[in-house]
Amino acid sequence: MTDDRSTLVVLDMAGTTVADGGLVEQAFSAAAQRLGVQPGSADHAEKLAYVRATMGESKISVFRHLFGDEAAAQRANSAFEEAYGELVDGGRIAPVPGAREAIETLRAAGLTVVLTTGFARVTQDAILDALGWRELVELTLCPADAGGRGRPYPDMVLAALLRTRGADSVREIAVAGDTSYDMLSGRRAGAGIVAGVLTGAHDAARLTEAGATHILGSVAELPSLLGVV
Image (tube, rainbow, N blue to C red; front, side, top):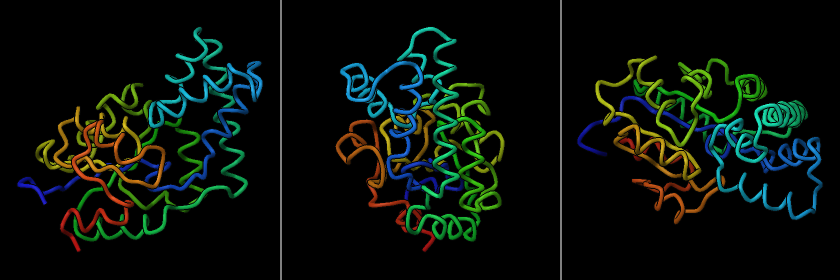
């Protein structure tokens, strides 16, 4: 617990509440190949390393960095979203164990919960539908919902506050995620708790370096951290 009791909880999806089993990398490889980047090539390895390093960032921003011009970035992003959507539709996605129960516990205790992602809205909705999570939380946000800037910017966290009015101060926000960019966005937003979880892309050292205030084995431990169980 902190001096400012958390009343608004902003959670990442893939790697934090949703176990995607490496689908991001698979979808990236499919998208890159469509733009002529061959699997096994040095170019592919270099681009994949960047994708891994920037997990949590808005995917269109990643593709702008990798492919330069806007047209190529948009083609890559569309191919990525299509490939990821096909994997989701194929049943290749599941909740992180205990994630749904943790969210339900937080809501039952009166906290407002928001799910955020670096994916486009169409992909976020496909994940929510596949898991039956449409009604699980008060609000879901993707970068476009917050003006277009995803993580590591604080925009989605602050948009969650403005849209839900779920806290009286940024210090009453708790953020949880599995990437360094999740941690950076939480810290930049001024959240009182920025918890890194070890079910996704980055390890405890990376999360701590990026500003995590707490390290959790998984999001299932969050209700205990926030003192609601």
